[in-house]
Image (tube, rainbow, N blue to C red; front, top):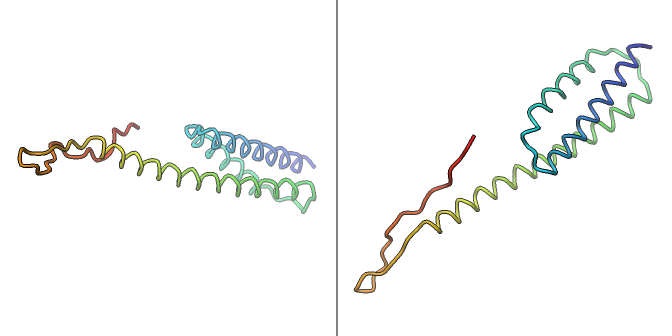
Length: 123
């Protein structure tokens, strides 16, 4: 009985954590994700150690956890694609903006400066 209560509490904590993760993803708070990952892993490990008989309440919670985790995974993938595209676009814009072209007295095109390949990356 007590083990079941702990399992329900852990499952609810995991679901709450997944919902917080969703909010962080939607708001672009990616710095919150590593800590969230560690806590999720710890809760999942504890839930796997629980050997409980089938329980409708727990199964409902587990299904909601699976559904929320899949939705978060889709958000993560979309965020990754968006950041990759934004990086590509920044590189493209920065390169074009940094190139200086002019013409010689004979009307020939001359590039005075080479394009800047990328932007400053900070950790």
